Image (cartoon, rainbow, N blue to C red):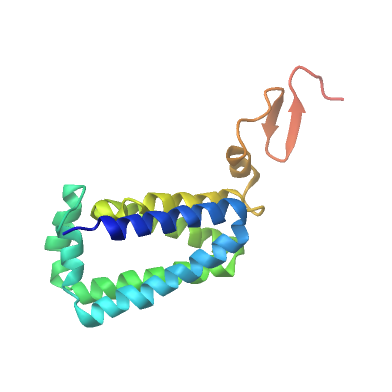
Length: 177
């Protein structure tokens, strides 16, 4: 099964998504939320209706980690249509959460990262999902509503002269007045 052309297109799409996430995180969050919904309905639901056993093949044809092949062969194979609909439901949910923004948007981004990391080892064609997960992570870390401790982490190492104490900071070696 030659998947190089598809994998190249998917890699390019993931790189564009990463660029958008870094350039305009708000737009990236919206676009990727819509993308998750489109993938759920346009790919997974259609896959369930047309060839539900294809979900088993997806996880058993070239898994990069052997447990994934076992899960698809022994768990997913028992009810591939149910599995596909559960995956599609999850994707729609996290896509809507991403689009909503705020705390729900952050949870949707985390859910998307988890989803992409879980499916990345399905085969060589899913490895670019790691780039898409990085795009979601970039959006998440640039969110101004993120707790300051995580925002500080995303902006690089803390200033060596300052000790971060939650909302307050104090100069090291300078007595409080």
